[in-house]
Length: 239
Image 1 (cartoon, rainbow, N blue to C red):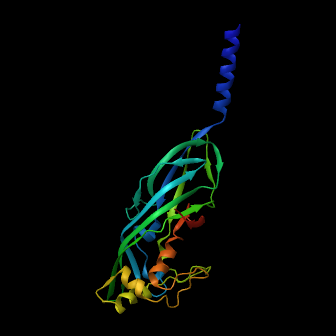
Image 2 (image 1 turned 90 degrees about the vertical axis):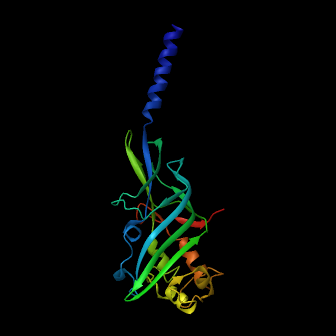
Image 3 (image 1 turned 45 degrees about the horizontal axis):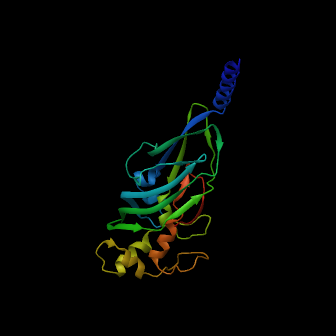
C-alpha cells in the first residue's frame, strides 16, 4: 500500500513538473544591412558611403528568460546572413513571456572604408569600452516545446551620429575624414588623428570629458546595442 501511494505521489509530482512547460530560446547577433552590405551614400547626410570589411563585437553575460546563455567570445557581423543574423547559443527555459533581457558588449572592432566622389578614406578602430545593456525593451515569447529568438542587434549607423542626445541626429562622416586631412593626409583615419581633432559641431549632451573625435566616437559605441531590431536597452559602463 505504501509503495503504491509513493508511486502515485511520484507520478503526480512528475505531472506537475511537466505541466510547467519548457522551450528553447536561441540567441543571435545581427548587424542588419548597414553592416553586412554597407551604409549607402543616400542614407548619410553629407553624402559619404561607408562599407565595413570587418565588424567584430565581443559579447558576454547574455541573459534571457532568467538564463545566462553561453556565447562565443566574439562574433563577426559582416558575414552575410540573409537577415537571420549570426547564431550564438541557446538554452532551455520555462515557457511564457520573458522580458528584462540583457548583455554586455565588451569590445568593438571595425575596419572599412568611406568614399565621397573621388575621395576615399579607410579606417581600423578598436573600442575597448565595455557596455552593459539591460532591461531591454522586448518580450521573448517561448512556447512549450517550441523555440523563440532573442536577437542582439548592432546599429552601425550610430557611429555616424552627430549628437548623443538628439531624437533624430544627422549621419555624418565628413568630420572624421577631415581628421586625416588635418593629420598626415594618407587616406587612413587613425585613432591618433581623431584624438587630436576637436569635437567641432558634434553634440555630446551633458556627458563630460568629450572634447575630441576619438572620445566622441567611443561614447557613440555605447549606443550600438539594441534587441530584436529597434528595441532599446538601458546602457551603462560595465566592469
